[in-house]
Amino acid sequence: MKAWFAMNNYRGVTVEIQKVEDFTWLNASYVPVLKQLQNAATQKFYFSGSGNRGTPIKFRNPKYLSMLNHLRFYIPEIYPELQKVVFLDDDIVVQKDLSELFTINLNGNVMGAVETCMETFHRFHKYLNHSHPLIRAHFDPDACGWAFGMNVLDLVEWRNKNVTGIYHYWQERNADHTLWKLGSLPPGLLAFYGLVEALDPKWHVLGLGYTTVDLATIKEGAVLHYNGNMKPWLKIGMEKYKSFWDNYVDYSHPLIQQCFMR
Image (cartoon, rainbow, N blue to C red):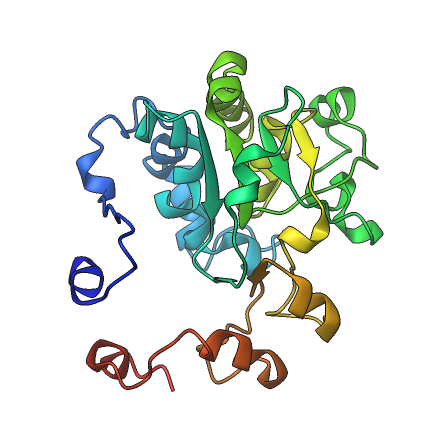
């Protein structure tokens, strides 16, 4: 990755590349996900084909325990001097200026995010186990979900409200996988509950990796998110959306050709 940015010009933008291994404080004594990885029951749940036969295989994918999926919950510690950041996932296209996001008033909230509750399957009850008394007591099952991928983060409010500590609390409660099964979004919904400011949907257009999205909406969108399995660099990518990705990829670049991305 360092070679890529060293070989390409980004109009004077400073790019800093960091490795997870450089953060020695990210260890099992501090990070619940890493502690759980050392647990025999967790290893069996995620890595054994003879594990919990009642749990669908997609819920036992080890990628959901990768620290790369959970680093977002440690941004204030990774960048202790910063006050506000815009978080971007790696499967997005930025096609408009995002500088306005830094001036948006979050009204005391920690995160600005685009909500996804236009359909009922994006409400809390679809991500969390509301039959569990701990979830039922603290969270509205019809609360609106939101998306990671393009988020405005007020790191001052994050630190003041100890969001990382809240995230740790819920991860520790879920050591037996009874509160939720899949991914880093459910603990995010819990950690940021009541701390999210809804953004205009034009800032973050979702679904280009799994569903139909109106072309007018795509053209108006600031950030296009290929969330889902059909990534634009894969053969299974949705053809009608690949051009929006290809516009920003130089397929003649030797490093791109080595990746067999086309």
